[in-house]
Amino acid sequence: MGGKAAEKARAKIKELKAELRALRKEVSALKKARKARAGATLAETAPGATATTQTPKKGGIVSPLAPPAFPDLPVIAGVEFATAAAGVRYAGRTDVMLARLAPGTAVAGVFTRSATRAASVLDCEAKLALPQDAAAGAAILVNSGNANAFTGAEGAAAVARVAGAVAAALGVPETRVFTSSTGVIGELLPAERIVAAIDGLAAGLDAGAIAAAARAIMTTDTFPKGAAAEVAVEGGTVRIAGIAKGSGMIAPDLATMLVYIFTDAAIAPKALQRMLARNIRATFNAITVDGDTSTSDALILAATGRAQAAPIADLRSSSARAFERALAGVMHDLALQVVRDGEGATKLVEVAVTGAESAADARAVAMAIANSPLVKTAIAGEDPNWGRIVMAVGKSGARADRDRLAIRLGDIVVAENGRVAPGYREADGAAYMKRAELVVGVDLGLGDGRFTAWTCDLTHRYIDINADYRS
Image: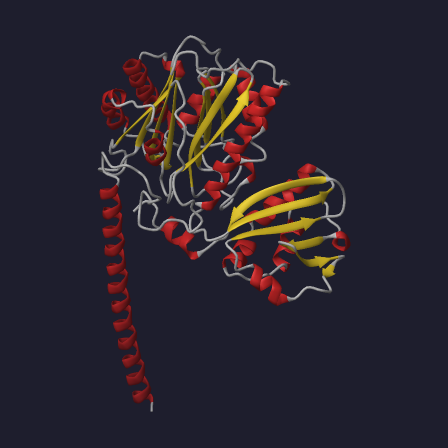
């Protein structure tokens, strides 16, 4: 009997080894197919191609939550764009964007609070702390493929080299050249490749090339992101147009995202900075994909002053209020597009918290729910597992009273008064969870504090993307 058992075990091992070989062949075939799809996408985005449909920069999958097409953004007087394939990480891929800003442009910015901020972020922060020369032009240069983060003195030198080359090519002060880098952390930026592309970029500047600029800054994004607004102010109309990138490593403060917003309004730098700063909390600092804060976040707002409208000087004026509402709308639109493009996302989720003892408590609860892997995987599985929402409320650190807590899925009251709602049916919750866009409502019943966050589900595709990010 012992000999027969050993023979059976050997046969089983042989069978398992055969299955393993077959699986390896299957994985190899899948990798080859994915590379072929990526090559096809690169061919679509070769120099001279026009981005008119939502096709991803890498791979062949576009988020199911993507808008149907890139919006038709208005030309902003005083801003020109150019893009190039500098080979920062991949040969033949458009990976550098240059924006030239006309003399007199006011610039404002907000950046990540990460303790390991990238060299370009530190450089931008230092430059924006200087008095702005209202008569000077300015420029923004962005590269994808390399974050230039955790690269020490060499990273700072790379920023200086790139900024200096841009300043020389465009005739603007180096202190008015703002750079951003996004991509792999910990690798030295090949500054010489970017510098080599700058003369070509300068020669190709075009006021109508903002869509190409949006594509150039993408990394794991599956679609370029843009938003715009027009608003009537005293003396005429001003326009706002913005582009963004962001898909993973998304969490306050800000996220792994780069955002560039341009307007032809005439607004002084300090007023522009105030408007930008006070609209961050409810937009870019209210989104999360995976709870990880990036080293490289940057949001730069540039006002060229070229509109045929009166300058906006008084922040209490009707023109200032109208402009700020429009700016907040563009920021909100771009922020939600980042969540819609969350790595592997199939559902957009609004988490609305009310009745908290304070606004800070409301935010703590909202972000605890929005960042919970258990909540997000339940959403991916279309499981109305509201017990996980209860868990997230409890772990948030905010004051909560079980017997006052109420939970909704859309308009469906799931729990109230410390227990499941008497009229709740699991079938109703399950049917609601099949929607692509969901609202999770939590009322703490303790005060007037409220906050709304936006997140997405957590799928196996997120693992696929991030396990394979550097290959």
